[in-house]
Image (tube, rainbow, N blue to C red):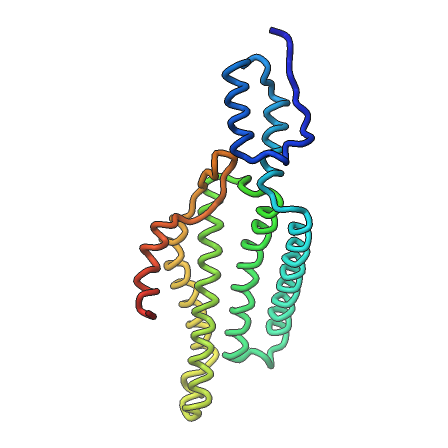
Length: 229
């Protein structure tokens, strides 16, 4: 049959995703020759738009996230530049701040752009499984490094205030560098099992997202949460 049938994209956003899927199934079963590639593309676009929040919500959130991203990148890059170029600022405390800026910058770069993309194209993850795992690995590593850096910095400040006579031996620059290297090694090792819980998950048969397994994440973090109850 040479006849084709193309349904315009106008008005699809008024239908629910389930109604659109059922419509495609019924039409395919009744008249499979009438369904062409253009029609399926139009319906796919309609499903994407129907799952997206209203533009009155999407645009303000996008602007807010963009401001956070630009301010975070500019602030952290400035911090790293100032500390690295001024030898007078090469102290243990400032090295911890430098490391904190690096970990925050890494988390911003790997975390914020996918979030903005997901706002505009929900359930439309554009990369493969390997990239999803890599994204989880880097995000978890930077998060762990941030927590460990703040902890080390707090301990260093505690020693400087409560044990000033030990500050010269415990807060040396060389010791801080060793601690920072250890922080990244530990953060990376802790992130490996977390990263392999990430994967591409189908969402209501309309697309996919990169996320962690809810069950395994629950099993990993429930013992920790229980300790604080």
